Amino acid sequence: QVQLVESGGGLVQPGGSLRLTCAASGSIASANAMAWYRQAPGKPLELVATITNGGSTNYADPVKGRFTISRSDAQNTVYLQMSSLKPEGTAIYYCKTYRALSGGVQANVSWGRGTKVTVSS
Image: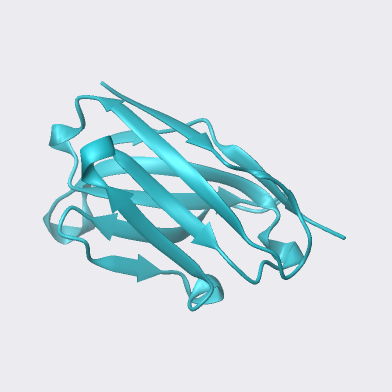
């Protein structure tokens, strides 16, 4: 069982920056990737960024060049550095760990409870 706790959300002005943290505990050895998702009010859940155990990263087009996902294996932590934030970035941001299998299948999926980010002047 993996426990994930997100932190770092809050109110930020457009153009500002924020760093989200996801601390993992428990049996994370079964996971080989971590990801950040977000859900804006009235909209579906959206993948933001992923990072594998090997350090490979992928980003959704809306955040490319502005967001950076990174991890600290020693601390079982994944970060999301967000810069040049836009109002449409207002959402609850969730952390996820999983084991990516062939064919796009994911196993051992665990979710955090989310942290709220509000981008507004």
